[in-house]
Every structure is written in C-alpha cells, then in structure tokens.
Length: 256
Image 1 (cartoon, one colour):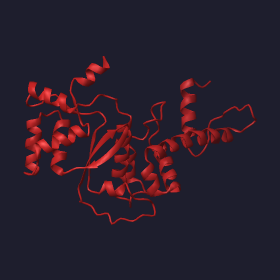
Image 2 (cartoon, one colour):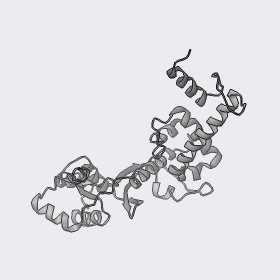
Image 3 (cartoon, one colour):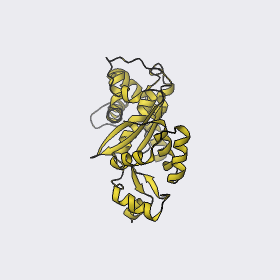
Image 4 (cartoon, rainbow, N blue to C red):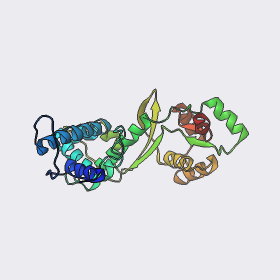
C-alpha cells in the first residue's frame, strides 16, 4: 500500500508532467488521464491568470499566446511553494533571461523585475511616511538623520534600458531600444497607486545609501561623488513630497 507521502509525490509528478502514471478514482466515470487534465487545467489557468495580473505589461508586449506558453513553462520550472498565489512569480524575471521564447527581448527581464517591484509597492505596509515637520524635528535631534529609511512602498530600479518608455509600449508599438542608456528609477506609492519616477544617477546613489542604512552625510558624499550638481535641499524637498522616508523605529512601533 502506498503511503500518503508517495501518493502526494505521484500526484505532483502527474500534475506537472505530460503523462499520467498514477491511478485516480472519479465519481463521474472519468479515466485517470481525464481527471488529471481537469486538475491541470484548473491549476495552470489559475496561476497563469495570476502572472497575467502581476506582469500585465510583459503580457501586452509578448502577446497572449506567447505569454501563456512562457508562464506555463515557468510554473513547471518553479512550482508555487505557498498556498496563496497573490505574490507568485518573484523570480519570473530571472526565468525570462534564459527562456527560449523571450531571449530576443533583452529588456524583458528588467521590465518584469520592474512590474514585480510595482506589485510589491502596492501591497507594502501602510506605514505613515515622514512629513516635513517630523523631518525638521528629527533633524534637530539628530543632524545626521541616522534613523532615516526608505518607506516600505519605495523601491529603486536601475537598468541599461529606458524602462519608463518601455512601460508605454504595446505589442504593436515600436521603440529603438539601445543598451547602456542607464535608466534610474524610484517607485513611490501615492494614494495606493505605485508610480515609477525617473531620477538622476546621483539621486539614485543617495537613496541607495539610505537604503543601506547609511546616514545623510554618507549618502550626500556618495551623491556628490557622482555629480557635483547634487543639491541636497532640493532633493530632500522632492523626497518629502513623494513620501519617500520614514524613521527606522516607526515600523517596529506599529507592529507592536
């Protein structure tokens, strides 16, 4: 007699495979193959639909048929590990780098990575961002602003492709996409709507230092190394307006 563990392994093998080796009982006189096809159709269609929602621009550029085949092969290569499919597909961009159907779309992995970050931004914790008054008060107590951190909904994105322009493409659209254009972007969430903002290289360098838990002095030095035109006061006003910052201990307090 097969153990439960062996039965589960057999079912998973048949679910992802192209042939059915197990024996399954149906109340509707269906064969094992017919029954497994029903399971496969439900399972794959559900997860493919989830990937379509998360990677809608990738879907739009590839077209439905190519995307569905790509998604199906991805699911087979990277089976879901959790019951919830809300955030399924975290390594979809990595898969696209080597996948046969998408290898000629050199920018596609970065586009998929961007879509993942936009999705993560949408579902990030609703922590209160730092406003101008709180920033001034904190700066008075700690001139180096050592507790300054990026808001959980904010993400940084760097790519050799113009992702902001690619996001405006459709399958029928055209854009001469060249490498080494070095796009730097900041993802912010306003009114629960994630947005991609193009930023300068020095701004990206500054925010990267903050992300790496460096104080404002270290972050400014790094930005100035990139460009002497970096204007800290102007950038801080922009960051506060975009609700980029929070304090290190804010998240901890709200979780308690």
